[in-house]
Amino acid sequence: MILLPRFFSLFALTLAAIPVVGWLILVCADFLSLADCLAPQPGWQLFALILSLSLVLPPALHAWPDRSRPMAELARETGRAVLFAFSLFALFFLAAARPIFQWLDIPAVLLPLAAANLTPFFSCPLLYISYKMGALLLPRPEPEAPRPSAMRVFSALSLLLVLVLILHPFLTPGGSGAPLVHAGRLDMLGAAWRYLALRHVLAICGNAGFVPAWGGCCLISLLDMIRALPGAGAVELAVMASLFALMLASTACLLLPSCRRWLC
View (cartoon, rainbow, N blue to C red):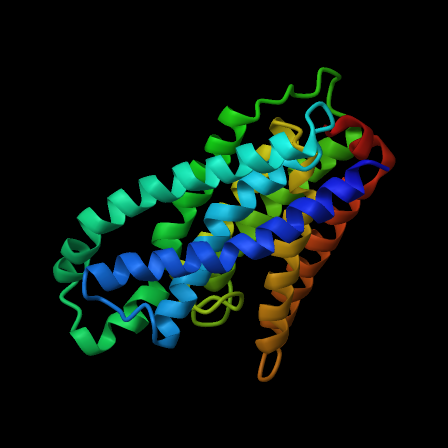
């Protein structure tokens, strides 16, 4: 019962931190004269939102199931992990963002669109860095018992989900490589990377805090598939049905009592 107050307390702190971190990201872009932090364009707003989520969510998700520490310590160390991860991002962004945009030869008028399209390039490493910061500052033991059968099924289903997600653009008629899930190839590959990372944290590390993240990623992918329904042919519908079945079955595995007892 103590987990729910901890979850909602850290969730409230996370909601408060996300806009602050997002604004600081826009300040970094403004410092490089790439954006206006007081009146950012939609592309930069999306860039800042996704990156702030990548910085704030992993440490909070790692921390909330921890019953061995007081809530004040969890909040303090979670905030410290976010601060350290943001500092590393700021150093990299201030040093490399302008050379990256210049190397891509992007006109100034297209910088907001380019920033939105490049969010997976920045967000995927940030997810890893912020999670590692949280795990370093708030170390927790991994499960000692062998993985239950339900978790082994989840491991297989989640791997199959990632493979279908990556390969499905080439299974559609014409093999154009255009994904049905997510806006483009880079977004789709970023989603596949997130699924793989979550699979590792759940099935290998046994971190119970990331069960909501798995459900959230599945929900986002499902909403993308719903938007792709109009005009979808038989093959596309079959692919979307397969992805939905894998998402539903893998999430159900995580909610089984044997998995919930094993995760910590």
